[in-house]
Structure formats: C-alpha cells, structure tokens
Image 1: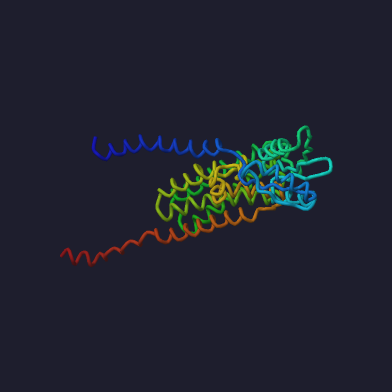
Image 2: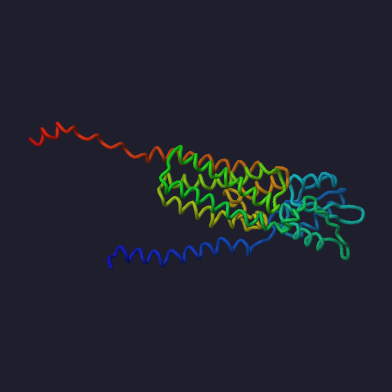
Length: 330
C-alpha cells in the first residue's frame, strides 16, 4: 500500500469515532444538564403579596427571570403573547398559577412543581393552562420531533442542488421551489392529518418552508463558496449542532449556557420557535425567529448567486481555422 491509501485509512479510522463523540456530546450533554436558567416568569397581585411570592421564587437561585404585573389579566395576556412561560398570581386564597403547555409542556410541569414547593405548607395551588397544547399532541412530541426532518430536508436540498451542478439563478430557484413544496407537505401532515398544529394553515406552511429554505440556502451557499466540503460543514452545523441546541423539545432557557442562545441563532432553533408562535400563539413573539431565518436565507442565496458567477467555467477557446492548420502543416 502506498502512503496515500494509508493516510486515508487512518483518517477514516479516526474520523468516525470523533464524529460519534461529537454527536454524543451535542445530543446528550444539553439533555443531561437541563434546568431552568433565567426562565421568564410573571408575578402578579397586590404589591406585598407579590413581593412575598417573588422572594420565595428567588430561592431558586438563577432559575427565574421575574416580570411583575399589576393584575391577573395583565399576567394572562403576557402568557398569551409568549412574553413569559407562566405567571404566579397572588390572591386572597393563596397563589394561583397560569401556565402555557403549548409553549413547553416540560416548562409547564416544572412550574407546577416549583410553585407548589414554594407555597406555604399544605396550600393547594390552582393551575390554569392559558394556552394549552393541542389534544392531538399534549406532550409536544410532534412539534419536537418535526425539526430534525426539516433540517434533513434542507441539507438534502442544498446538497442535491450542488451535486447536480446547478448554479446562480437556477440553484436559487430550485431551493425556493423545494422549500415551498416541503412547507405545504409538512403543514398537510402535521396540521391537516395529525392535528398537532392548530394555527393558521398557511402561516404554518410558511414557517416550515422558511426553515427549510434557510437551511438549504446555507448548505448550498457554503458549497458555492468553498466547494463540496461546504456540504459537510453545513450539515454538521445544522444537524449535529442546530437540532440538539434548538431547545424545541423543552425550552432554550432549560439548556446550558450559551447552548440555548446559540441554538436560537441557527435555523433549526429559530424555525422551531417560529412554528410554535404561529401554531399556538397567533404569531406573537415571532419577529426574532423570522429575522434569523430571513438572514440565513438571504445570505445563503446571495452566496449561491455570487459563487455561481465565481465558479462559472471559462468559455473554450475557438478552434483554429482549417485553412490556417493546413498552412502551418505545409
């Protein structure tokens, strides 16, 4: 065997375990360190009683980011608008808890346990689920498991466009077409068939399609600028990091820092947050996710167009005229 095959053999033997270790770290470490970190939580009611509630919640050091509201109605509105995950309301009968299991069933359960533990001994805490998860998906399993197929679809779209040799406008058109069709198909499956999404159908399809476009454009853009290796780099970024860092199965605030923040900067995390907003909260708190996905899409498509121009093959030189060849031969 020559040196070159030996090097390739060693590279394969070492690369696969490294990728496995990276995948295990990315998927298992955040799950093993799940805990509330500055989780937005509202407190409402008369000032003295609300202050006591806030003091009890503060005993969970660094767990909650408290937002004060003057009344239960304001707290409820904040929950409905995704400003907070829940709210504790001080009443004359004791604390009451407002949750939104549609925002995260995991967080809703966590708040029940934390508020019950913080209440005076023997006090029963009434719980109102202000924005409940749909009956067809009470644990958020469909939404949580749906982000990975979107990421795979985006990676596949960017890879196929690159490997088929599509460049410039044709590549951009193909990516836009794939994203639009995947958005429609995914909305038909998750909303019309499974009933796991309950918002505006076309808004859901748009959110799903924009997520695929952001991922696919990024993959194709990397490949257009640095070659086929860009497909691998983009796939690692979107699938190996973007999916486990998205926090879609729990909440970004439950992941270790700065994993939750990084996840929301990547298309899978932003796409999951956008889909939750349009599916359950009438689009509230969707602007940040829309901006993130739009930036990835625009930058990726721009790279595809620029890369298509840079990698455009040079026109072949015209063949010499037969008469000139004959003259030179003579």
